[in-house]
Amino acid sequence: MIQEIKENILQAVHPDAVVEVQEIGLQSVLYIAPNYLKSVCKFLRDDSRYYFDFLANVTAVDYFPQEYFEVVYNLTSIPFQTQLCLKVRVSAERNLNELPEVPSVSEVWRTADWHEREAYDLMGIFFTDHPDLRRILMPEDWVGYPLRKDYQDPETYHNIPIK
Image (cartoon, rainbow, N blue to C red):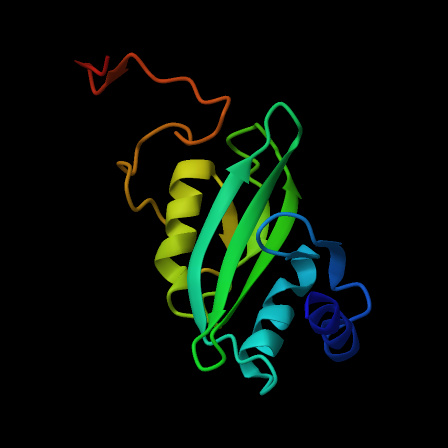
């Protein structure tokens, strides 16, 4: 099924939309080029053969010391009772002022709004065109992204010891 989905994406969206197919493990994965992510997601939601109407989760994985992150999208088609995993690989800029960017899919699935905010808050992934990208779990003035593997816990926050 994954090869069929890949071929249909390449025909409907763009020949460069799918970067890689991973068919090992419990679930196959389509790696999507970041600039085609939103178009691929709209296609998978709207195409009557797939109808991935539910975005179950968006999360990010830090592969430090390797220099990349992966943003993971778990899609579900409730009527067809099928699931699909999409991933987008982005370079891991460790500079807190130059965050890796991925297009927001919040206009495709409203549930992406809070999932993307969490990935931004904890991993430092910037979702372009997100309607309200701000911290959701950490205080607004928190420095850094606590789920990154290179994150260093601060000793104090507003002169209050943390450890």
